[in-house]
Image (cartoon, rainbow, N blue to C red; front, side, top):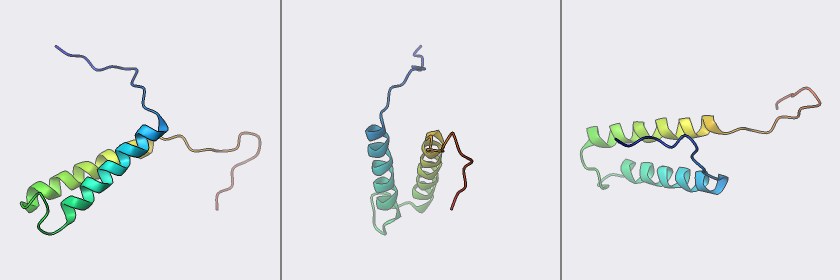
Length: 73
């Protein structure tokens, strides 16, 4: 039985490439007459892509100053 690697090494450039590929696939699925002609299959796939893009986004650590209070805007 296979096991997952707990120490996956993906760099920032790799993440950008994955996100760009997912957005491109999502765009192609949303086009009329695209590769997925069945709307139910295409809708399910688009939802799955959105979910994965959201999880990737949540993995990111954004810069926040440590010495001063953070004020957004």
